[in-house]
Amino acid sequence: MNNVKSYKSQLWLRIYGVTAGFLSYSAIFSVIMNLFLVINRSGSDLSGLGYTITSWLLHVIYASQLASGLKTFFAILVIIGIAAIFLTCYLFARKGYFTALLVGAILYLLDFILISVYAAYVTIDSGVLLSLIIIHSLFTIIGVISFVFYFLILKHQKIDHNDHPLNGPHEGVDK
Image (cartoon, rainbow, N blue to C red; front, side, top):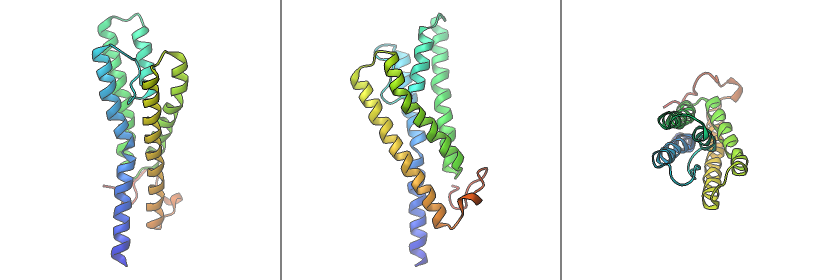
């Protein structure tokens, strides 16, 4: 019976680790796609795999009166900076910090909401808009799954969530 409990706990930890990874997956996709758009500077300002806030800031940067080299510099800085925020949330969430998972998920949800605001602000190809909505929906679902497994792990380890030090990882969640 103890082996089954241990196996279940290990399985839940793996699933949590993978699903909390939505923060890192989205950051990696965003960096790749937005750097591609910055380097080519052709086509849409909005990447179907990127963060909406990044696209919005890139739009502001490229509409500014800055020199071309400065525009590219600030664009790359924004792309890497926003992705770094999500990667940092992932790294701490992977170690069991619930606050990092919550902050990352809230930021991602706000980014999802910005799609409609951004779509009204600029002209967007319907295919890019649809892919952006689908990708954000999938990552949001994966984020919800990570919350479910986070709390399953807590329950399984018989640790009250109120006793969880939000400034420290759970035993067994830390990798």
